[in-house]
Length: 236
Image (cartoon, rainbow, N blue to C red):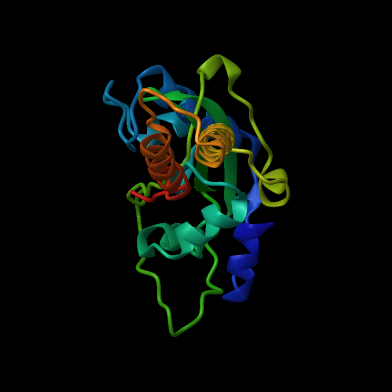
């Protein structure tokens, strides 16, 4: 499990999967699609912690990481670990449990796969202290500020809940990857057609009133380069 692998490297205990947190994560993703927003705070005014409460999870400490537009779980974890605020959630010694949901839907007009990762420690649970001395963590008496990261998504009713263990093992086929693949394939076919047309006309010296094959090929090459440069993820 990728999140726990990062914790183990720092001598921290592994986080246990909690079904209530996974359900809260699923509900958060569904809310993001329903209200069409990419933020920790819903336009309805709901904070991340409202979803903890909705499923009956009484927390002493809580945190949230969000992701969208990533190709696989490894890329998500790498992006989070490269961000100090997101890494702080992953390696926080005060957290004991986590839940994860991966949901496909349409967000802000684009097909997207959202990853919602919630962290928590039940109210009344004893805190852990196995963090390295060289990296002290400031004690938090209330829920930590939410942290957020990006990935692509479709509809709440199609929401799929994925367990923590499967998130680390199975690659996520994001809509962005499919879009890029389709764009590259289509442009490639058109380039081939125009290249063949240009070659035949030039080779046979066929008289034509006008030919824009070369200009069309240049345009398609530009589109192809743009497709290849499309970024698969971002953190916020």
